[in-house]
Image 1 (cartoon, rainbow, N blue to C red):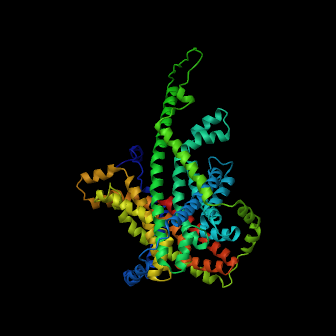
Image 2 (cartoon, rainbow, N blue to C red; image 1 turned 90 degrees about the vertical axis):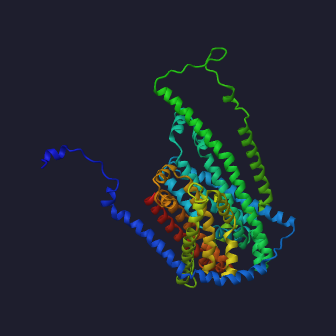
Length: 579
């Protein structure tokens, strides 16, 4: 029997990594799991409550055949008109993205905690970013059309302000991840704050800034179609006019043009990212390697022998330090920069922005905004809350169905886990094609097939979520470390056992974050799809705008804003718990 002294002298075992789960924190960790299970159960109930089942799809098949008969053959306008409308749509999306970048950069600098003057400024900037993201762009467009009139100006301002919510957040997150070492070195050498930003921060964040801008351009291009239903010109406006005349041949023909335009933009932006970003990352890696090597030499006390110039008066600089050589990579960057500048100038001219219209609208801004205050609810809050609940159910059902479809598609699109790696490019192309279809067009088609109501909105969101979640699932699977998979395969495990034992548990946290983000997006999308008859609070919003009930519009916006903020807080809590 061991004495107390012998017990104290026994070697101690390291604590189990699962010990924390068995202690007092167990209840704390149990609450997020229960909340997530409750959310999934509610989503399943929403699918059942909305009567989204095989019978609904079978009943809609006959309507789909009839709709195809009214849609075909497609009626394309003259090529010159198609080019003009496409140019106007592209110009609006480009100008909106440019406006978002110009606004997001200073806001993100204030929101980044490592670059802002104090935490109060950072909190205020972060709140501004959340507010811009929470208010849907179509709501901003309704107010902008009222202020600036019909045309591209209202669409550019609406999409530009709304884009700050996404671009500003991502820019601020990237800025907070910049290393402090280069900035401290420049500060100790007497550099100013702008010099620190351009020399130490900008080279680090430039790749992410470019990727975010290109992604937002894709989003704004699809959003411009929806804004056409509230008076913003371009392809979206012509599609809205065609469907209002029940001219499905012309409307679907223009929708096909939008699809092709989105696919071309997706492929073009992907090509630009692959051409620019790897080179920038390689350059930064070389710079870090060179800096690390210099620091190691200094730390170990190795005295470097300076290279003297011809006059022996000091170290000589290579010519490339003063004037970098014109390599193929540098020439390519200059070409991309010149082409980008030319495209932006052409976009500003193509959007036909009117300074007089802009100044006149700003002059009457206080008067128009006064119409939206105070918030009112003539029919009572009960009807609005019921419509909001329909929107939430639509988003839940669409997200759940989209996730169920995206998981197998994402697995088949990732060649490292797919049972048929040769088919992975085909499934990748499928996700790109689906992402190119504007959800508003899907909703219009499904409203014709399934009838008015939230079923069409939920199915449209499910198809849209398939494209987005399928891509993110494939990307997350491709980034997995192959070592655990190979080790399990070497033991003789089947591919199915390898996936559920080694791959799926590791990708689950990332997949959970993607699904919660998509649900956040679908909440706003479900409200917007109500504009075309998908039900919910979007339908109430459109009716309020049509009858000039501006106080009711404000009340509806506040309800959407509150719902979005609560959902964002819940999603942040869940992600921090599981990741």
